Image (tube, rainbow, N blue to C red):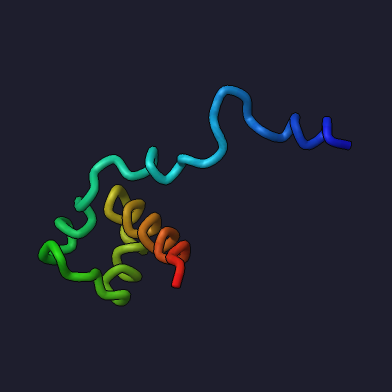
Length: 72
């Protein structure tokens, strides 16, 4: 039964690390939304940006996903 689980893992890439690969330009979402550095992005602006097409929408959707990962 242990052999089945081994085949599900992709070879050559370590488990995890996708977040580091996904964030290519830190701060670009904040800059495109016109929010000053050090301030949090309001949830309403983030939700509106998540519906936008292109890179802005992609970055906003990723931010919403990462927001859910936050621990206490």
